[in-house]
Length: 254
Image (cartoon, rainbow, N blue to C red; front, side, top):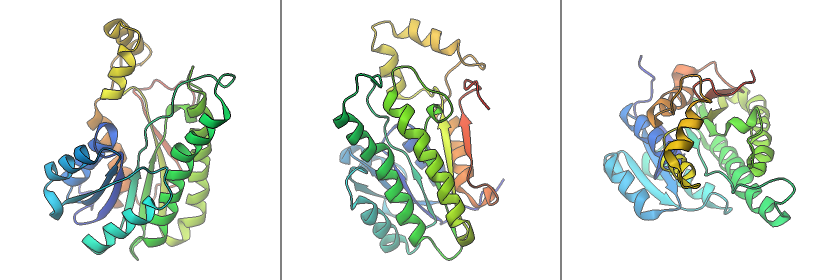
């Protein structure tokens, strides 16, 4: 299937590693041009070079929780490639902790990084997409549909952003700007492997986690990137205001 992504331009955040990088690689493979963002400047530059250099991807380092980075990313896309067609917005998960023990300061910091930063970027992208319309995909979490033990910040903020994405889809549909969310389950990234190793028994923890997944394995980053890129693309032109779980069937709710 031709996804219609050739020479379209997307901002991709969290692009230096993990799910963001996997999505950037898949977008580039489909012919898109990219503005990559993340906090690790060296890793980001290496990713841009690996994707073909400035003809295919440029790097703009920054922290999405800091106001103003969203304007820089959009301006860079238009200045370098002459158009903007959407964004894949991925940010790292907030720290673990319970609702009872997490203090107000941690909630405020997580709100800036997990909720407000992505929202600012989504609004800015929506205001500057090409006349053909555009697509925004927010990488969320399965905590949108059911709480994850020990992740109170994610349990509180990810569902809020998902419902805000739904609201944006309602508001922007008349301009042919689509807004969707995607919910990764257990994907075999560096972050997932680090979490498994935290207790000192990574193989045992991984086997226990895999037992919770109906497919009995972790997903590969590419298995997440393919549906994410499809949702970004013109091939998904009648899909908006929805969330898609890419979790091997792990989520027990509809």
